[in-house]
Structure formats: structure tokens, C-alpha cells
Image (cartoon, rainbow, N blue to C red; front, side, top):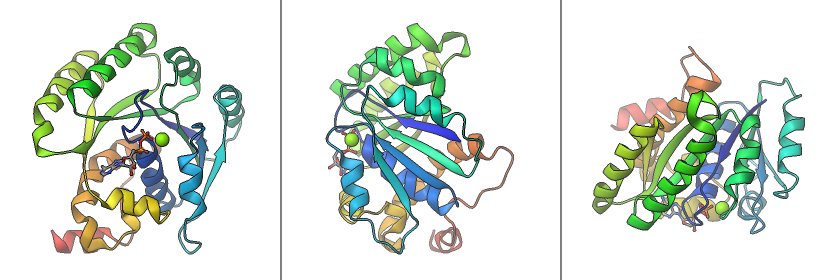
Length: 237
Ligand SMILES: Nc1ncnc2c1ncn2[C@@H]1O[C@H](COP(=O)(O)OP(=O)(O)O)[C@@H](O)[C@H]1O
Ligand SMILES: [Mg+2]
């Protein structure tokens, strides 16, 4: 069972948004998705509680920060490649605790807002991780996604981009700020489950992120990233 964590010590950077949307994409690829909600605010649990029954099933379990490493260690004994474990980490999760779980992670996604404060805080955080663990190829395969992107965030995105290039983490995507995300969250859905016409721009932004995941989950395979939608999407572009 592969394990994907979504982390950034800053609250409001988009961790739960990424986890909920990723869950929907991955469930549509046929994976059985289990989310561990490590945040006492329990947003992922709230999200799944209102998820419509007719949509692909996603399981969400609460997990305490103290119990997480043990949970992930146990998950390693599962050889079921159709199951995926997604970890929604809370704001303020300490670097030390994050490093403790890195041995159990296959992939680590870091969403960030491209504002000066957020970029600086993230660079500091990544530097701490990098110093401890990420040199010599240790640690999970990691990538950063800019969230709530607006046209005027370009400058800070480029600062982030050049820092990431130095420490060899890719910036794999950019998710725009749109009401589609709160709307989907309120309905227990991902944007991929909203009417196609309103989410075309969003799905196109998810493509490189999903491709990055697919390269690890299904190396060498051609994956239909948006099953049933890919054709309609190609026709509408
Ligand atoms: N791209 C986006 N566009 C608009 N609103 C967003 C976007 N990403 C997140 N949000 C909203 O911002 C708030 C914080 O996002 P959330 O994913 O809960 O962050 P975190 O889990 O990192 O604290 C939520 O209300 C969410 O709906
Ligand atoms: Mg959250």
C-alpha cells in the first residue's frame, strides 16, 4: 500500500483541499482510498460525512499525531496495491514529528500559498527538512504545489521556484483560487465531481500533479487521468 502525505506547518495552505481532491481523483482511478485525518479540527472527516453515497467511496479515519507513526508502520505490512493511504497533516505539525514519519511515506506533497510570508515560512521549513533528511536522496519523493494562485502571486512563485530548484524539489503545479474548491468541499466532493463546464480550468491545472503521482503509482503506464471526462475535456479545449 502506497502512502502519500500532504504537509505544510502553515494552516490554510490547502492541505485538506489537496487531500480531498486527490482522494476523488485516485478513487476514480479505481483505488480504494483511506485518508488519515491527523488534524484535531477534523476537516477531512467533516468533508467525507456529507459525501454523496453514489460517488466513489472514500474512507476517512481520525488519527492522533502520537499514533501516526505506528499506524503507518502497520500499513507497510499491507501488500494490497489497489489501496492508497493519504495522510492529512495538521498545521503546526513539528519538523521532528514529520521526520519521524518520512520513512513510511512514498510521496510527500506540500501545498503553499505564494504570498511573501507563506513562501518564507515554507522555505524555512523545507530547509530544516532538507538539512536533516533530504540530502543523499533520503526521505520521500517530494513536490510543492502553489495553491490559491492569483495573477499577482507570480513574483513569489518565482522566488519559491528558484529556491526549490536549489534543493531539487520540483514545483509541479499551480491551483488557482476559485470558489469551486469551497463549493466542492461543502458538498463532500472534489472539483472533478462538479459539472465539467465550471471546472475545466481546474482540471487542466491538476493534470501535471496527477501525472507526477501516476509516474510513481503506475510507472510506465498510460493512465486516463480523468476517467470518462478526458474525452469531453479534449473536445472542450
Ligand atoms: N484554491 C482554492 N481556492 C479557493 N479556496 C480555497 C482554495 N484552497 C483552499 N481553499 C479554502 O481555504 C480554506 C483553507 O484550506 P484548507 O485546505 O482547509 O487548508 P489547510 O488544510 O492547509 O489548513 C478552506 O476554506 C478551503 O476551502
Ligand atoms: Mg486541514
